[in-house]
Image (tube, rainbow, N blue to C red; front, side, top):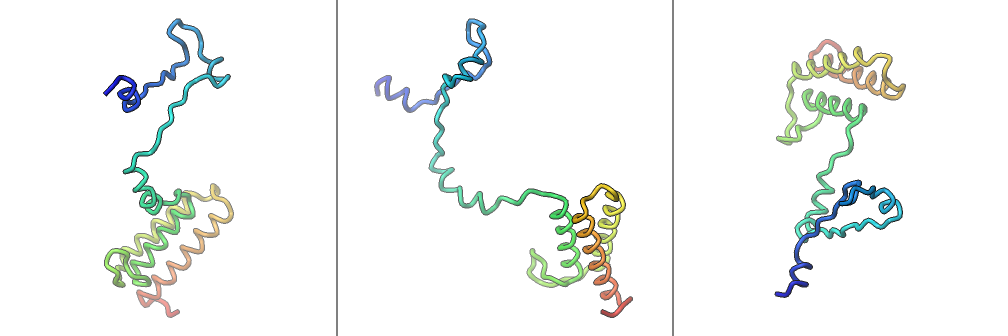
Length: 142
């Protein structure tokens, strides 16, 4: 293998420091676009896993999605929807009560700091979980 082929197959190191070897600033070279930018092609392994990576990516977490995760957990604990793990409807009303208490604590601690839509979502989720909890414990009839 000759030297040219070895250079093509090896990796390249690009100096991205803000100054040249003689101490002069590189700012002018960078602003004029003279800096070399290495081209990085994805490996065959990366290209083949791309669809799997996109499917596994979760949406960014924000306050409404955080509250909705507790709401979903509450519905699972009440036996309203099947558990994502077992696929069966299972009840644990005490754990649901704990989830409602967490949401109530969040409502109290975030009072005055939420947007109107976030406040309304939290209020609705709490109301619905409380009513379903009361119905499950035979305190009210829905």
